[in-house]
Length: 417
Ligand SMILES: [Mg+2]
Image (cartoon, rainbow, N blue to C red; front, side, top):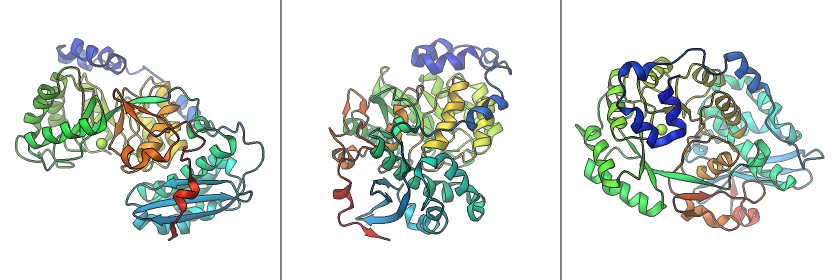
């Protein structure tokens, strides 16, 4: 890989400015033999993830239920010995994936020892040809059950979720706040970003460029090229800026927008090309000096492996819900670590940032920032000591499992659906 791209990932903005002026040939220098090969990565993926410390006797799953309270869907798991765990679904997927959860996912787990989670996920994949539905349809319900089981196992072992799938390396993480808007003129977007920054306490932000899966059309004429320099000018040089095109461009357009992002020394450029067009995404990553991030809609371990082995992106971003939970995402992070690439998970909204925090607690290179779409004001008080943001850094819950201190209280008034 190019010295420029690798340096950027560890050196941030300072490195970005050092390489922004290099010529195209320097940008594209990238030895093919760098990093681990496909077979090395395959071996990494075959290693078990769940850690059994503190789980000395079987934890037999007695029931898994889908509950609803107000607008929130909760998956509740209970063991034969009365251990419990919960997860919150990614809104609003449970409205239409609840049927898959109940008919095709839960039956695989009931009566089984939760400590066999790694193997149970493979059983789930094969059950009733579930693999034919892989993607959000299968991986989201899988993630809900996996999170609830990890919560239960964490409570049994008295360990936070992160300690069940890795070694805890941090108790807080820097965050950027993300705008999801494209309906805004540059001026309206700036005002909106300022509001998000003041609400979140973040010292970094992400905004959207392009038109979202738009075959190069902008959300409104001139929005992207006006907004990119305006964001830098408004927030100043000390602010870290990320941009996401949500699959908007072909490589020539993506590279053009990428050059503008290089000019303002952006931290990274997310999903420049259609998300599943790996060759185009790689062409953009090869051409730019700033890192290219992607993977929020990647559903295949083999394709993540390809992207990592071939440096198709510079930062991998599995979504903890869309990609089927902590265990699958940890396998991606392990592959990425072998290639010295960060894994910065993508998150669905709502409660999703809590799982992101646990994942970031145990991934040594989780990137410079984690994404935040607000939520502490609603969910923070559920945790011992709360979830707080100070100086742009968010605290990570330390209690057992997911860290919700009062499961009984949460379940009060919840109805089975
Ligand atoms: Mg994105």
